Structure formats: structure tokens, C-alpha cells
Image (cartoon, rainbow, N blue to C red; front, side, top):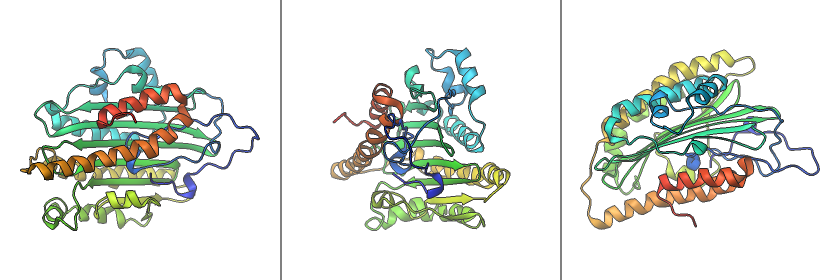
Amino acid sequence: MLRPEPHLRSPPATACAPAPAHTFVAASAPLSFRFPRRGALRLPLTRAQPPRLRDKHSSAVRASADPNAAASAVARAPDMAQREVARALAAEAEAQLGPRLLPSAVPADVAEFSGGAGNAVGSLDVRRGAPGSSIDFMLQSSLHCKVPNGAIDITTILIFLNGSTDAPHFLMELIQGSPTSIVVILDLLPRKDLALHPDYLQKYYENTQLDEQRGKIDELPQVRPYRSPSLFVRSAISPTAITVSIDCGQGGENALAEIVRGRLATVAKDVLQIWLESCAGSTTEMDEMERECLIKRDQTVRSKSIEVDLTANLPRMFGPDVSSRVIAEIQKAFGVQEP
């Protein structure tokens, strides 16, 4: 739902009768990226292997996956700093959450998928929380999409908590449409109205000094604020959210990779650690009405995400068959029924 900056958009198609444009929005795109309108993406007819965000632990629990094919996919996936950071972050979360996460049960044809021409490729991994855990699910997704002026790459980690706690969810999304620039969304998503619950603001945002992490990114000279045109998105994120564009300018490929692997990776790990220590294992005493309001808020965010982003964009990139399988798996994770 975050519309890309102009430098992330592909030029309009010139063909009079464009073929169906295929689009994938990373599963956490509730707070992320929206692709151009139908026909705005015209994809060259070259094949690529799906990028893999999951680490070897997640891959190992899926018996249906072909290990030789998996190795080939890893070898051919674009080597990008943002994926290295996401893989390391996901591995850290899985290691610390441990038995609170169940093994992945995502079908092989959803774990990795591609558009008809093979130029839009994606991967999705979902691990549900174990019974008795405060974890609802952990979702990882990756996208690599070739467009006429380059490629768009999106990597996402989303960890949602269930109704046993009111603690915030964790979100990181990295959106790159140029070798020299990237959009970063990193936040602990609040589950209560912060103006109505100042104690919640203090507990999860002030006492944890999250704003200091935002300051470490904001102080970089290559950084400027990223403002979503969606009022819904702006209302859903916290006041300490890191929503920025990092632009290193012409010839700045190495400088961007250095920032992503350095300052950004450090801040992301610190924010994740704050979430793991302050949120992941928490339980909250709530009366029935309070819990119902919390769950209703969560469901509204999830339903809005699927309705606005996934059902609108996914079929345009991957076609109805592939997109229906992927959306069904995301609906299952989100606990949202098909309308």
C-alpha cells in the first residue's frame, strides 16, 4: 500500500494491445508496495529462477521440495545486500523463537512460484506459532521482477502475535527499484490507539528507546523521509517507524550496499531484538471486550491488506492460477476467509 517513489516506477507500455501484466506484492504488502496499473509493466521474455529468502532451516522442513532444484534456485537468484540482511534477520528470529514456531507447511508450488514468462518470480514461507505460544505466524517473502528499466526487488519479514497479548507486531520490508536506492519500512506495528493508551506508547515505544534506532538511520546524508500516499498506512504505523528512502545517487551501488549491510542491518537487528525481548514472549491480562477489540483491529488490517493489495495486484503478475494458490496460503496465515 506504499506507492513507489517515481524512481521505482516502470515507464508506460507502448504496445497497443498489451499482454496481461503479472504482479506480485510481497505477502506483507499490507504496509508496502503497490505496482503500477494494468499494462504498465511489460516484461521481457527471459527466464529467471525464484529468489529464496528462507534459510536452510526453513527449507529443510519441507520434504516436498526438490533439494537439487532448491540449490539451483539459490545459485541463480540475484545476489543483493537486502536479501542477505533479511535472511540473517529471519535466521535470528527463528533461532530465538525456537519451539514457539512450527515447521513450515507451505506447499512447494507456493513456496516458489513465477509468472508465465518467468520474469516475475517469488517465494513465500509461513511458520505458524506453536500451541500456547503468543506467536500467530512468521511470514517471509521475496520478489524479483524484471521491468524495462531494470528490476524491482522486495523482501519482507512479518511476525504477527495472537490475542494472548496486545504487544506490537514486527515488520520489515525493503523495496528496491534501482541499484542505487532503496525504500525501507521497519516498525513495531501498534495494536492499540496510542493517543487513547499512553501507557502502551510508553511501554513499547518510549521505554524501549525505539526512536533512537530511527535516529541512527535518519542521520545518514543519503536518507530522506518516505511518506505513503495511503492514509490507512500512515494510521497503522507507529510514531517511531523507520519509513525512509536511501538514495546514493549515480554510481552509488557500492555505497548503498555498504549502508544496507552496515548501518541498516545493525538497526534492523536491534529493532528485532527489542521486539523479541519486549513483545514476543509477553502475555496481557485483558477483559473479553478488550480482547475482542484487539482481534477485530488485527482482522481489519489483514483483510484490508488482502483486499486492496493482493487480490488487486497478484493476478496481474502471476495469472489467476498461481495467484489464487498464493493468496489462499496468505489468507490461511492471516486467518482471513475468502470473500
